[in-house]
Length: 262
Image (tube, rainbow, N blue to C red; front, side, top):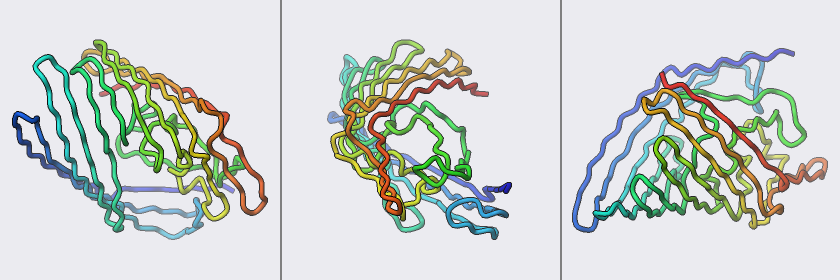
Protein backbone atom coordinates (compact mmCIF):
# COMPACT_ATOMS: atom_id res chain seq x y z
CA UNK A 1 0.00 0.00 0.00
CA UNK A 2 1.38 3.35 -1.01
CA UNK A 3 1.79 5.82 1.78
CA UNK A 4 2.24 9.54 1.36
CA UNK A 5 3.10 12.26 3.79
CA UNK A 6 3.20 16.00 3.33
CA UNK A 7 4.93 18.19 5.90
CA UNK A 8 4.75 21.96 5.55
CA UNK A 9 6.35 24.52 7.84
CA UNK A 10 3.82 27.32 7.91
CA UNK A 11 5.70 29.54 10.33
CA UNK A 12 9.37 29.74 11.11
CA UNK A 13 11.07 32.74 12.64
CA UNK A 14 14.27 33.26 14.56
CA UNK A 15 16.06 36.08 16.32
CA UNK A 16 19.37 36.36 18.15
CA UNK A 17 21.23 38.71 20.47
CA UNK A 18 24.75 38.86 21.90
CA UNK A 19 26.81 40.88 24.37
CA UNK A 20 30.53 40.60 25.19
CA UNK A 21 32.84 41.74 28.00
CA UNK A 22 36.65 41.72 27.78
CA UNK A 23 39.18 41.86 30.61
CA UNK A 24 42.65 40.59 31.40
CA UNK A 25 41.05 37.23 32.25
CA UNK A 26 39.60 36.83 28.77
CA UNK A 27 36.41 37.53 26.85
CA UNK A 28 32.99 36.52 28.18
CA UNK A 29 30.20 36.35 25.63
CA UNK A 30 26.53 35.90 26.51
CA UNK A 31 24.06 35.48 23.71
CA UNK A 32 21.15 33.42 22.56
CA UNK A 33 18.57 32.89 19.92
CA UNK A 34 14.87 32.09 19.81
CA UNK A 35 13.34 29.97 17.08
CA UNK A 36 9.62 29.58 16.43
CA UNK A 37 8.63 26.51 14.42
CA UNK A 38 5.00 25.69 13.61
CA UNK A 39 4.26 22.73 11.34
CA UNK A 40 1.24 21.27 9.59
CA UNK A 41 1.46 17.57 8.65
CA UNK A 42 -1.10 16.05 6.28
CA UNK A 43 -0.74 12.31 6.84
CA UNK A 44 -3.37 10.72 4.59
CA UNK A 45 -2.21 7.09 4.95
CA UNK A 46 -0.98 6.92 8.53
CA UNK A 47 2.80 7.03 8.10
CA UNK A 48 4.63 6.59 11.40
CA UNK A 49 4.05 4.79 14.67
CA UNK A 50 0.91 6.63 15.75
CA UNK A 51 -0.93 5.84 12.46
CA UNK A 52 -2.81 9.13 12.67
CA UNK A 53 -4.33 10.03 9.33
CA UNK A 54 -5.77 13.42 10.17
CA UNK A 55 -4.05 16.75 9.66
CA UNK A 56 -1.68 17.30 12.57
CA UNK A 57 -0.31 20.51 14.02
CA UNK A 58 3.11 20.66 15.65
CA UNK A 59 5.21 23.20 17.51
CA UNK A 60 8.87 22.52 18.39
CA UNK A 61 9.99 26.08 19.12
CA UNK A 62 12.93 26.65 21.46
CA UNK A 63 15.17 29.23 23.15
CA UNK A 64 18.95 28.76 23.30
CA UNK A 65 21.20 30.57 25.80
CA UNK A 66 24.87 30.67 24.77
CA UNK A 67 27.55 31.46 27.36
CA UNK A 68 31.17 31.31 26.15
CA UNK A 69 34.54 32.33 27.58
CA UNK A 70 37.92 32.54 25.82
CA UNK A 71 41.38 33.68 26.90
CA UNK A 72 43.83 34.15 24.03
CA UNK A 73 47.54 34.86 24.47
CA UNK A 74 49.71 36.99 22.17
CA UNK A 75 51.25 33.88 20.59
CA UNK A 76 47.82 32.52 19.60
CA UNK A 77 47.45 29.99 22.43
CA UNK A 78 43.94 29.95 23.88
CA UNK A 79 41.69 28.36 26.50
CA UNK A 80 37.94 28.29 26.04
CA UNK A 81 34.74 26.97 27.62
CA UNK A 82 31.09 27.02 26.52
CA UNK A 83 27.66 26.16 27.91
CA UNK A 84 24.41 26.19 25.91
CA UNK A 85 21.21 25.40 27.85
CA UNK A 86 18.18 24.84 25.59
CA UNK A 87 14.58 25.51 26.68
CA UNK A 88 11.77 24.03 24.57
CA UNK A 89 8.11 25.03 24.40
CA UNK A 90 7.09 21.55 25.59
CA UNK A 91 8.67 22.31 28.95
CA UNK A 92 11.83 20.27 28.48
CA UNK A 93 15.20 21.78 29.40
CA UNK A 94 18.14 20.27 27.52
CA UNK A 95 21.75 21.13 26.71
CA UNK A 96 23.35 21.60 23.30
CA UNK A 97 27.08 22.15 23.88
CA UNK A 98 29.03 22.03 27.14
CA UNK A 99 32.77 21.72 26.66
CA UNK A 100 36.28 22.83 27.62
CA UNK A 101 39.02 23.30 25.07
CA UNK A 102 42.51 24.64 24.48
CA UNK A 103 44.89 24.95 21.57
CA UNK A 104 46.58 27.30 19.11
CA UNK A 105 44.50 29.71 17.03
CA UNK A 106 44.14 28.68 13.34
CA UNK A 107 46.24 25.57 14.01
CA UNK A 108 44.80 22.99 16.42
CA UNK A 109 42.44 22.48 19.35
CA UNK A 110 41.73 19.79 21.93
CA UNK A 111 38.12 19.64 23.10
CA UNK A 112 36.38 17.57 25.77
CA UNK A 113 32.75 17.59 26.93
CA UNK A 114 29.53 17.66 24.90
CA UNK A 115 29.61 18.94 21.33
CA UNK A 116 28.89 18.00 17.71
CA UNK A 117 31.80 16.82 15.58
CA UNK A 118 32.11 17.45 11.85
CA UNK A 119 28.90 16.99 9.87
CA UNK A 120 29.44 14.18 7.35
CA UNK A 121 25.82 14.00 6.19
CA UNK A 122 24.47 17.57 5.85
CA UNK A 123 20.77 17.69 4.97
CA UNK A 124 20.53 21.39 4.24
CA UNK A 125 18.57 24.01 6.13
CA UNK A 126 15.03 23.13 7.25
CA UNK A 127 15.00 19.61 5.78
CA UNK A 128 12.74 17.04 7.48
CA UNK A 129 13.48 13.29 7.25
CA UNK A 130 10.87 10.58 7.80
CA UNK A 131 11.77 6.88 7.95
CA UNK A 132 10.18 4.64 5.32
CA UNK A 133 7.66 1.96 6.20
CA UNK A 134 8.93 -1.58 6.63
CA UNK A 135 11.36 -3.17 9.05
CA UNK A 136 15.02 -4.12 9.11
CA UNK A 137 14.47 -6.37 12.14
CA UNK A 138 15.61 -3.89 14.78
CA UNK A 139 13.30 -0.90 14.45
CA UNK A 140 9.90 -0.16 12.95
CA UNK A 141 11.35 1.24 9.75
CA UNK A 142 14.47 1.05 7.63
CA UNK A 143 17.52 2.47 9.38
CA UNK A 144 19.27 5.03 7.19
CA UNK A 145 22.89 5.51 8.14
CA UNK A 146 23.83 9.22 8.28
CA UNK A 147 27.34 9.02 9.79
CA UNK A 148 26.19 10.62 13.04
CA UNK A 149 26.30 7.74 15.53
CA UNK A 150 29.63 9.02 16.85
CA UNK A 151 29.12 12.70 16.06
CA UNK A 152 28.23 13.62 19.62
CA UNK A 153 25.55 14.93 21.98
CA UNK A 154 24.78 11.30 22.75
CA UNK A 155 22.98 11.24 26.10
CA UNK A 156 25.33 9.85 28.79
CA UNK A 157 28.41 9.22 26.63
CA UNK A 158 31.63 11.20 27.04
CA UNK A 159 33.40 12.93 24.16
CA UNK A 160 36.85 14.23 23.25
CA UNK A 161 38.51 15.25 19.99
CA UNK A 162 41.54 16.85 18.39
CA UNK A 163 41.00 19.28 15.49
CA UNK A 164 43.67 20.63 13.13
CA UNK A 165 43.48 23.32 10.45
CA UNK A 166 45.84 23.42 7.46
CA UNK A 167 44.92 26.08 4.91
CA UNK A 168 41.67 25.03 3.26
CA UNK A 169 41.74 21.67 5.04
CA UNK A 170 40.28 20.73 8.43
CA UNK A 171 40.97 17.33 9.99
CA UNK A 172 39.76 15.88 13.26
CA UNK A 173 39.66 12.69 15.28
CA UNK A 174 36.68 12.60 17.63
CA UNK A 175 35.77 9.92 20.14
CA UNK A 176 32.62 8.87 22.01
CA UNK A 177 33.09 6.63 25.02
CA UNK A 178 31.12 5.03 27.84
CA UNK A 179 27.35 4.57 27.58
CA UNK A 180 26.48 4.75 23.87
CA UNK A 181 22.97 3.33 24.12
CA UNK A 182 21.68 6.57 22.61
CA UNK A 183 23.30 6.08 19.19
CA UNK A 184 20.02 4.92 17.64
CA UNK A 185 17.57 6.77 19.86
CA UNK A 186 17.70 9.97 17.81
CA UNK A 187 14.72 8.78 15.78
CA UNK A 188 11.55 7.91 17.66
CA UNK A 189 9.99 7.07 14.29
CA UNK A 190 12.54 4.31 13.80
CA UNK A 191 12.59 2.65 17.22
CA UNK A 192 9.49 1.45 19.05
CA UNK A 193 10.51 2.20 22.62
CA UNK A 194 7.71 0.05 23.97
CA UNK A 195 9.03 -3.15 22.39
CA UNK A 196 12.75 -2.46 22.03
CA UNK A 197 15.25 -2.02 24.85
CA UNK A 198 18.64 -0.49 24.02
CA UNK A 199 21.41 -1.44 26.44
CA UNK A 200 25.06 -0.49 26.72
CA UNK A 201 27.87 -2.07 28.73
CA UNK A 202 29.21 1.46 29.35
CA UNK A 203 32.59 0.53 27.87
CA UNK A 204 32.14 1.62 24.29
CA UNK A 205 34.89 3.52 22.51
CA UNK A 206 33.89 4.91 19.12
CA UNK A 207 36.53 6.58 16.92
CA UNK A 208 35.41 9.08 14.27
CA UNK A 209 38.12 10.53 11.97
CA UNK A 210 36.94 13.14 9.46
CA UNK A 211 38.48 15.49 6.88
CA UNK A 212 36.96 18.51 5.13
CA UNK A 213 38.16 20.64 2.22
CA UNK A 214 36.57 24.08 1.69
CA UNK A 215 37.50 26.09 -1.40
CA UNK A 216 38.82 29.63 -0.93
CA UNK A 217 35.56 31.17 -2.20
CA UNK A 218 33.47 28.82 -0.05
CA UNK A 219 31.64 27.40 -3.07
CA UNK A 220 32.79 23.77 -2.84
CA UNK A 221 32.99 21.68 0.32
CA UNK A 222 34.15 18.05 0.31
CA UNK A 223 34.05 15.88 3.43
CA UNK A 224 34.86 12.27 4.12
CA UNK A 225 35.30 10.19 7.23
CA UNK A 226 34.23 7.13 9.15
CA UNK A 227 33.00 5.73 12.45
CA UNK A 228 34.38 2.63 14.14
CA UNK A 229 33.52 0.86 17.40
CA UNK A 230 36.98 -0.04 18.68
CA UNK A 231 36.05 -1.84 21.90
CA UNK A 232 33.74 -4.40 20.23
CA UNK A 233 31.52 -4.63 23.30
CA UNK A 234 28.91 -1.95 23.63
CA UNK A 235 25.34 -1.69 22.35
CA UNK A 236 22.59 -4.29 21.98
CA UNK A 237 18.87 -4.03 21.19
CA UNK A 238 16.42 -6.51 22.77
CA UNK A 239 12.97 -7.18 21.34
CA UNK A 240 10.82 -7.71 24.43
CA UNK A 241 8.11 -9.45 22.41
CA UNK A 242 10.32 -12.14 20.85
CA UNK A 243 13.31 -12.09 23.21
CA UNK A 244 15.66 -11.73 20.26
CA UNK A 245 18.86 -9.73 20.92
CA UNK A 246 20.59 -7.76 18.18
CA UNK A 247 24.30 -7.16 18.77
CA UNK A 248 25.38 -3.78 17.36
CA UNK A 249 28.89 -3.73 18.79
CA UNK A 250 30.73 -4.99 15.68
CA UNK A 251 29.98 -2.14 13.30
CA UNK A 252 31.62 0.64 11.32
CA UNK A 253 30.50 3.20 8.76
CA UNK A 254 31.98 5.40 6.05
CA UNK A 255 30.74 8.64 4.50
CA UNK A 256 31.71 11.03 1.68
CA UNK A 257 29.84 14.25 0.91
CA UNK A 258 30.21 17.07 -1.62
CA UNK A 259 28.32 20.32 -1.02
CA UNK A 260 27.89 23.32 -3.34
CA UNK A 261 27.18 26.54 -1.42
CA UNK A 262 25.17 28.72 -3.80
